[in-house]
Image (cartoon, rainbow, N blue to C red):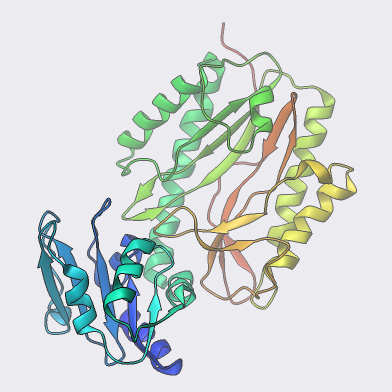
Length: 364
């Protein structure tokens, strides 16, 4: 934790930033290992250019047990509902530029600007995002383990496809599976989508049951030691059409083409296009309607993406998804998703559940 804070302070000094205001609960946990959900109440960690900081907490929030290394570095300010805590924040700010967290509600910032007329706010959340985006060896190890459990969950859930459960029933089964695997709940709302429902990339799980030959899109993830897992596999409920199999193989080839090109220095645009070109060459480009991937860590979707508009080169230690898909309205959807860690020479795929086409005959 201390090393992360040192990195932040170094970046602040490099850019002559006097105050860094952090409101995102996941980022606060990342830097000082304290986490709570503030709801509508103010939660703020301010870090100063000398490495000290102030943590502002409502008295309703759990009291932090900061590591000894932070006890003389981070002051804690408790406030009650209605107390003018913004005035205290203003009094403690140092002269100079103030980096503002992109997630801080604007009404708090506007109140601060009214009180502190010399405030020079800048949106530099990218400093925090960039630090969080490079996973340490410890973080990588946790994420490998999280994906290992997600592989196991996928295997158990796929075995249940044969029974023809509704999408909602499959979601309930998944919740039980994660509990049995000692995971800490969903990392996002799972997607179970049969047949035409799979043509909606963000389908809301319903009471729909599968028809023979349907594709079954299964997009799932859980929380493990405060880190998220995420993967997607598409299987078949009974023998699919030849065309559905062709769509599946196209997506699988796109997934692999993107993975094959990943290495430090390759841009995210190039990775996205490696997948996109495969689908376009199959004449289905207009049915690949989203980016190829997103960053992941303490949250399932973190800052950073694998899109055709992101010309940033990837770096060692970044973790992101590769999840091309084809979505044919009214017919079917196919998506295949893996998480990867960028290594010195390429990438490590941390999902290992098979990507071979699985045809699951209904159990009568």
